Amino acid sequence: MNNLLSKLPELSGLIVSCQAPITSPLHNPTIIAAMAQASANNGAKAVRIDTPNHIKAVKEKVPVPIIGLWKQIVAESDVYITPQFHHALAVAEAGADIIAIDATQRKRPGGEKLVDIIRGIHQQIGKPVMADVDTFTSAKLAIDSGADIVGTTLFGYTEETKNLIPPGWELLKHIVENLKVEHPDILVICEGGISSPEEAKKALE
Image 1 (cartoon, helix red, strand yellow):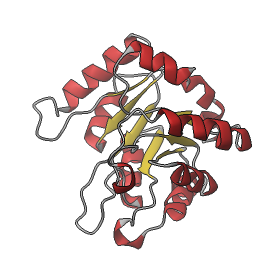
Image 2: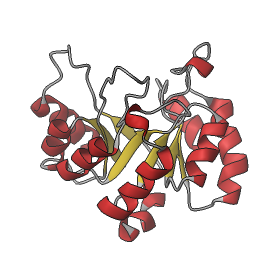
Image 3: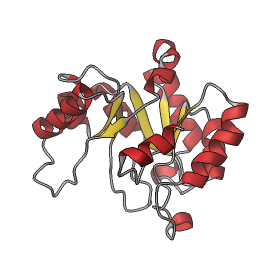
Image 4: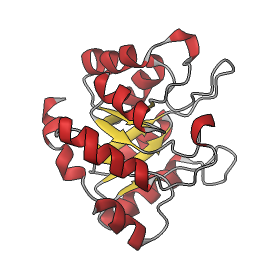
């Protein structure tokens, strides 16, 4: 894990999410792998991939780091991005280099705690953790719990932020100006709502 952590600054740049809804004809390991390969060939620093099967397919084709996750709907919780530790384990076993998890303050299924999942990923799996957050408070709690990367992924997708539209520019700025100063080794990613080169450039700046 230490080797990859030392390379996190190299991820500064475009990270491409190569995913498709389960109902889409594009939800196919071969297609997702081709999308990821095309992204890497054109300069993506990393790719973000959903489901173990897709992660495994991408790992065989793409040399750049894979941020892996597993979207799972659990009846008792609104958390669906890698909601439990066993999901994180499956993502890691499929070949993900970084494990992305929901790091909002919402109740997790099975009563699992964010800090315990992050600790388990570090100690039992040996992978860095990307915390998908919705608010500054969630970002701070995630970093305090040991997250290595913070992304604005869930801004606009939780009850607290449902009336806000990504990208979360103010959230990104608040995290960088406050938490990044206190924790310089943390990588901060603007995720969600980036739809043009100009917006991507703004996020990097």
